[in-house]
Length: 114
Length: 108
Image (cartoon, rainbow over all chains, first blue to last red; front, side, top):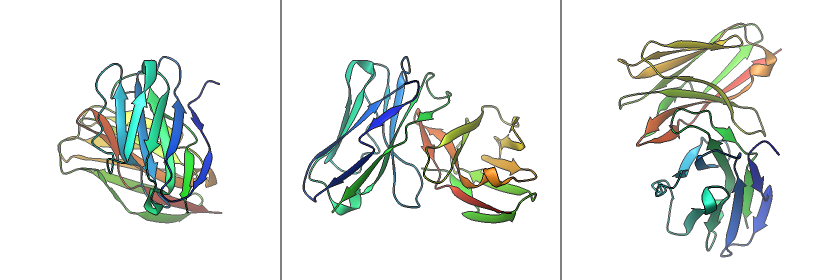
């Protein structure tokens, strides 16, 4: 497809389990973001990848959260030992141009931790 | 530090105008506006890069006052399709940080 693809679209898990969320950005886009959106809340920045540079992890809320981007393309956000407060929609966005480019968002992965 | 948006929510009747403000305590180098309809992904509206710049999209326009460190989004003669949450974003340390959003509801 031509857009940003995220999977799974919905994930229900039990507290304490690990989850992996995947983002497949638009081909050729060098910038990739992960944001978190809790119910009725804004877009909370989590992590930013730009080309081959070291990622900006300053938004990750705890060391249970990690992300990687392989080959400058697909990214995986991993949440270990999930907690109920991790329940949210996790949005991935990519951009062709650094900083000033339009962000293209995926449909998101809705995570529910029971 | 994320930009601050006001108001938090607006209810309008179709055809009325609205203004959404975005301000920052730190210097603004660019302002990014997005709209998110209920249950959908945010969609890009416009980027303003220079102080005093104005841009338009449909009947939606925006201004950027670099000195005052603020931007305003103007929705003229609002349509039902304008309903959604509007986010402004700014560059912080080379990444885009968004405000908490302004929920806009248009009544017929």
